[in-house]
Length: 198
Image (cartoon, rainbow, N blue to C red):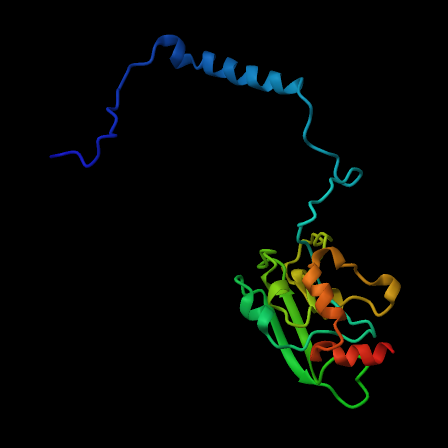
């Protein structure tokens, strides 16, 4: 039978010597590597006391943003859920009732918004898909837990607080084009908010 490739290697069934069968050279070689690491600089840190700096592009726990007036930006359009490759986002849309204009930005809002943090791969596609800039990935770590159900984050954990002092800063994740777009009064997206800010 002809060989399919010219890169094939001939296997040699070489007999081991008595010393090799004792595995002493292999054990001593492993101990030598271990002893070498004793005298090198340690790369580990004592985590709760010491914290390593995150890269500027680090993507951590999600946040659902509010606008300048404190209303929720999310309109439950579902683009983030469609963009999510892990199918970690689910939502239920509802219509805003009279008198709730200060709570929700548009007539439609997400009455239920959940992210399964065990499924999420923190890719940031939800953030890119959102037309209203409602969802961002922050530099916060997702809390650990022993119960799986506690990793399904609802609006109670995702929506940022009403107080402007407690809002989560995501300005470093916004591009310059986004900032210019948000301040342009001619776009229909900003007309409602430029009026309310006057």
